[in-house]
Length: 289
Image (cartoon, rainbow, N blue to C red):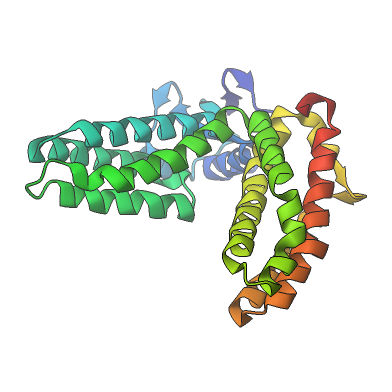
């Protein structure tokens, strides 16, 4: 069978493979490239999930055509996030139980259509909003969605900015690191002098910053191709994050044990130099500056 992706030959060897096997191979390749299949036509006929399952055992090496439509997963998720934010705005302005009920119906459809695009953390925010929508329909003016909706808007507003401009998002992360650099060096002293709240705030920001870089990196590599070959303190990106994860696990143990001395040491001698090396490498990329 002739298999095309967005009108271009896929280059897939279909000999001895079923349609299901060929498409699985293509899907894996597209996923690695940050893309997702959004449409399938077999012999000129649009095929849904059920139809595709029925054709999966067909010989892909025989006659026929398969036309695949694919798009960057980030673009698809960005559109989903934009729709989500529009629903949050609609819920905030609904004003009546009937209005909230209408938004809830749209919300249920949204979750069914796009739920698979979101991480567990993102799903937890949406679950909370769904609960607030249910409460909002119970005879009030819809303000039950206000606080939860505001948090969701802030959270997903940041995620949308990352999806739309990962290079700028990484630059923003770099600026956050610059702002907490000195504070990380002072965590140990602050824990020893009764300024626990200040020290813990710095640690929370630092951990969130690390999570942000992990989240952005795949998008950043696509936006800034030179980043794929970037080294951080002489290590590849994969090796750097593997070692950083070891430090984070140690940090989690220190928090669990309430070991302030170890938390301070990890902040000053592990997190600070690693983050400094990471953002120095980011700044050295011509396309990222």
